Image 1 (cartoon, one colour):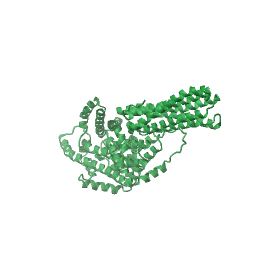
Image 2 (tube, helix red, strand yellow):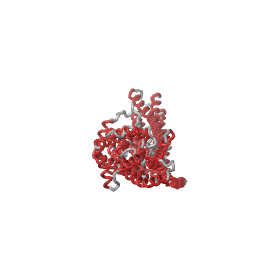
Image 3 (tube, one colour):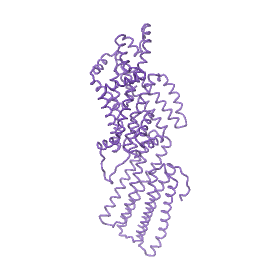
Amino acid sequence: MEYGILDFLGLLGAVGLFLYGMKVMSEGLQKAAGDRLRNILGAMTRNRFTGTLTGFGITALIQSSSASIVMVVSFVNAGLVTLAQSMAVIFGANVGTTFTAWMLTLFGFKVDISAYAIPLMAFAVVMLFSHKSRTKSLGEFLIGFALLFLGLDMISNYVPDLQSNPAMFEALQRYADMGFRSVLIFFAVGCVVTMIIQSSAATFAITLIMFSRGWVDFNLASAIVLGSAVGTTITPILASLSGNVAAKRTAMGHLIFNLLGSIWCLALFYQFTALIMWITQKIGTGDPNALYTYINHLRVETPEVYNHLFDTSSNPDTQLQLSIEAATPMLRSLQFKASIGLCVFYTTYKLINLSIMIWFTKLYVKVVEWLIPSKKKGDDEFQLKFIGGTLMQASELNITQAEKEMFVYAERVGRMIGMARELVHTKSGGDEFNKRYSRLEKYEEISDRMELEIANYLNRTAEGRLSNASKRRIVAMMGIDSEVESIADCCLGIGKILLRKQQSNVHFNDEIYLNIDRMFDYVQTAMDSMLRLLEAPDSVTENELIVCYNNEREINNFRNTLRQSNVTNINDHHYEYQSGIHYMDIISTLEKTGDYIINVVDTIKTEFKHVSIHNKG
């Protein structure tokens, strides 16, 4: 039977189904875990060992080392973990990806999971109609699990039959008998295939099928799997391209880890595979290469049995059927043992790599910092620190980046209060006044752009898979984003009032300057208190909230006092009427700034930290 274009497209579709199943399964678990996934990663990366265990556990849970490492990139961006801690998580994630390989081996060959996939989906679909969000997410996980193994079964059906396509077999054999050069060629194949499909698990599944049919021996199958470890680094690299320096450094650390591991493994390749064969024999599964020998024996001695073992489309006669039934148990047993051997190779390689590399995390940090130096930019340049154009696969974790970026944004806007205060005391009409006003104006323009970038990022995050609590959190953050921008508008508004004062040739006396400074003190104190809440909104205390509301009350009371005394002071000729107008405009703008500040505090109180207090006033 010729292998045609429809068969090839069927193979691509089977791989696509496998990848889609993995994606659905991963997203279902991420959504079910919700913000707890963020908390777990944030809490368990305090040292290299807990970081490694965290990387292993998260990767085993969501079935994707690439997704885990993209999460780590976000945590470095968000400042929750250092670059050194991220390296430990990356090491653990690389070991955690072997969990998928073991799952495919144990379920794919030991149990015919595809026979149970459809009934499993029927059960999972019922869960989708549950009123509980977590039950729905678990139903999606089960559907993804079923699709993954249906895809694996279809890959097995659609891979070409080499016995019926001798040209294909000859092409494969041409590169399989070149000694160590064959190892390098198949290593490159594993690397390229994984880069294209962006999943080492899918490459492992395809390799498992090839190996189980005896197309490649244990050495070449191991070379493909080794190459996939390097190829899988492409996903975090692509994710980091539009990110900041920390993102690029983390992705580079992942690449270096796998490259160095592949180099030592290739240098000792035959000795290492011999060790793996010895280990598999010691644990009782036998020689993993026995499958290759057995299948080649069938291909040469009884080709009709070989053909019918892998192609059930025709009906064999009674004698042939007996031969097939006799060969099938042996074939299934050897396939399982061979797949165990391949998993042992993959896991042992990763564990040895981890046991060596974990002691050099500080060196890793120095190397990646040297390879990717930071770009020094001026404080007045527009630059988002924690978020970029590329979203991670885990939308829940994008929120952490946005929260940190929000704090940086508010901190930058907070500086404008001090700039406006300096401008008040700068002599009108001079170069220094114009220079300071231009800087304040530039900061306000940066604020507008930052507000837009953060809002767009939150909008794109909201389109992903989120728990209900996280959706509410995003709405709250968008509100905070707008309030912070309004604070920046108020600061520039003070500058515009001073410009009008300058054009009117109005002057302030010492009493006015003293009262404006005192109002600035109140507003700056309120801003500092708000920033402390915004830096860690989930750990806000009741006392901190009371301080914020007291600050707002002081601002309002002082504004009221100044408003009443202003009329008296004008009547008593302490200053001119026009001076009093500009003076009150500045005071009112500062009081309005306090309103925007307390709006942020209100949002944090109601949406981030549910605390019941009754003295807002």
